[in-house]
Image 1 (cartoon, one colour):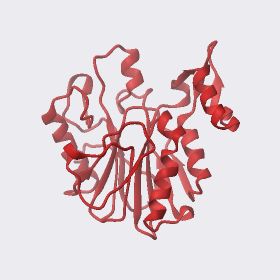
Image 2 (cartoon, one colour):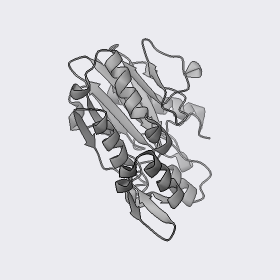
Image 3 (cartoon, helix red, strand yellow):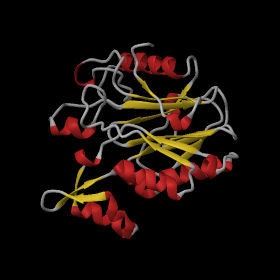
Image 4 (cartoon, helix red, strand yellow):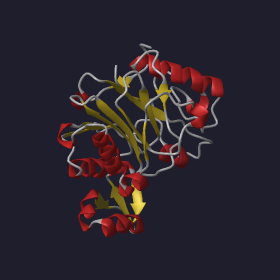
Length: 254
């Protein structure tokens, strides 16, 4: 669909992929746009129509494979289409099978798409703060390696997510990251008393680099700050909106 905005990353080259926002969908109200949130209060028919538009924009006619995201570090190796109602509880997927379109939904968390062109292996991960700290990107890289990828050949792109300027957390949140690794202090800057600003995108990028990923591209797109382009859980909460939509990030082998 020509009106669906597909944001691509140079690092991922020619592989079919895209970080989609809210533009080009049929949902209305607080979900207005391309809402792919199956657990939102949006009309089911609108979500189904949005799914079809998203697939057509990235890899037409491919089966869309998603997981029931739970903020874990669990990864599924996909070998065939998965029925939507039977999707496993996990936060990342990998595959080496052409024709499958992997999809991750987000609304402030970081979507990560990964590709080893030589091995023909792709991955998609949902990295909220909990999954990122728990190692979801490390686990995704390891699962790709198990399929024949090599870490230094893997390219990764981090799509639209909440930016440091928009992500206020309390001091206890920061201490949790610093307890894992004192060097994580660099991802926080002081805010109002008792609070700090967290750079989720930079943290995810650092974890990918530490895992040996050869190229990491961060798109630098703030979901919170751009209401016309992206859904945001935190923005919806601050506005006391009744619900919120989710955007999807897609990658597939032709």
